[in-house]
Length: 85
Image (cartoon, rainbow, N blue to C red):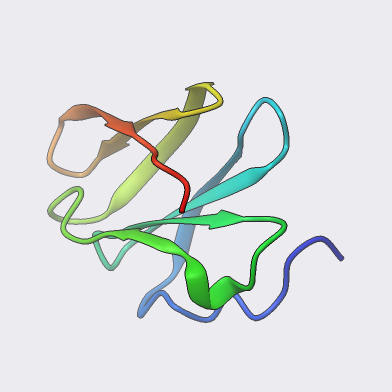
């Protein structure tokens, strides 16, 4: 188990992506949010992008160690820069 207690979404998780260096994992949900967890930190220190895609997040991919691309029900593709704490 690399990460546990990932209980922060309020609806079904639709997608998941690992960063290339395996230091982070991102989850996308029907609740419109993307949550990014750093593996070496407690889940409570997560980064949350609220309202990332209206209707839900359906696709995630890391393009490098600090950039996440997402797609959703709103027919948009967005790029997010991740700044670990």
